[in-house]
Amino acid sequence: MTKTKTINPIDYIAIDVSKATLQVQDDQRSFALDNDSKGHLKLLKHLKTCQNPLVVFEASGGYEARPVRIPSQKGDSPRDGQPGQNP
Image 1 (tube, one colour):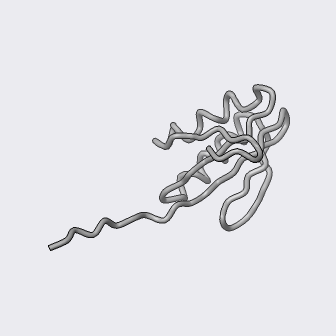
Image 2: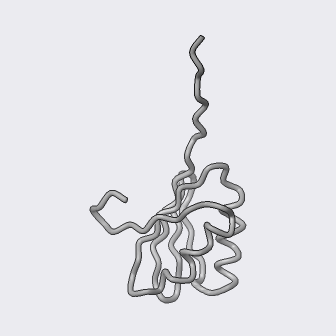
């Protein structure tokens, strides 16, 4: 008998980070959040609604340092992405 492995669908989430905002794009919609503690909380709440998120941050000038820690608060590992590169 062969075991079949169940694969969870991935919820892809791309986040473009700037000093003032987080531009969030997922499979369903895109939206902007402030790049501050309130915006980070909203992002964490959004990530908690995803079953199997794969979060990719487009780093820009160090502004990603705080938001990149948010997925780990949910137990996920973030990925750092640059345009034109595969993480």
